[in-house]
Amino acid sequence: VKLLFCADLDAAEAATWRTALAAALPEATWLDGETVRRDPAARAGVDAAIVANPPPGSLQGLPRLRLIQSLWAGVDRLLADPTLPPGVPIARMVDPAMTAAMAETVLWAVLALHRGFFDYAAQQRDGVWAQRPQRRADEVGVLVLGAGEMGRAALQRLQAQDYRARAWRRSGGPPLPPLLGQAQIVVNLLPLTPATRGLLNAAFFAALPRGAALINVGRGAHVVDADLLAALDGGQLAHAVLDVFTTEPLPREHRYWQHPRVTLLPHVAALTDPRSAAAVAAANVRAALAGGPVAHRVERERGY
Ligand code: GLV
Image (cartoon, rainbow, N blue to C red):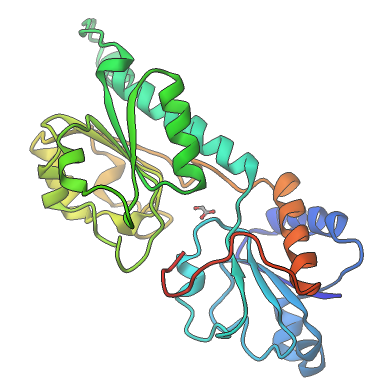
């Protein structure tokens, strides 16, 4: 079995992945993007590709390719490559360790927003001693956008902590505007598709109760940045916890860095864990090469 591993990762991360994947797929011979680009004979042999945001063009001209397995949960950047071979199945990564990490991050952010801990951190910086009202979790409405693997895990964690948490899904769910009016905290876990890009805009923020908060752990492009900044500046939104940005790394001069109502993370809400994800990828590669169904297959028209 010949497998292409092509990842936009730093050298240490790539090495960790190579070790984990080699252990999970001992039967495989591994090729890298460079070799495959240069050597037509190597290209002709590639059976499946395991990729993390590969450079556009990496997956074209591979006549035997039977599976493209993403190491990322979100495949928006992968699907943006116009040279992706049309008939080959693509699989998202669904990694249990990543799902658990996402539920933890969402719980941390919701708890901190609900209990005012970000405000207390600011008070400490300013040397201010002031106690704020204490609300109960069951008084806080939380709306999770997205009901996929991570959205559902976050929802369950929040409900287990007594939050009034609900999830919204774009297709086949209830309409969004009535839910927004009851959401003190919104958690974005949607996939980025043409239908969800820019969904978090001025109209969206205006439909929330005044003083609501946003947790964006989906993709930066879900948010219209100018609209979010205006909502934060005007107090319509009290706080935003942002893990993802339209441009990453977030440019040093971006207003989010210094904004008093923004808590910022460098895209770490949930990382794929090579220890568990390599096994997931291996099972999918074996299934695809045996002609069986591929788990977590992306529907290209839908965009996730
Ligand atoms: C992270 O953002 C991922 O899509 O895996």
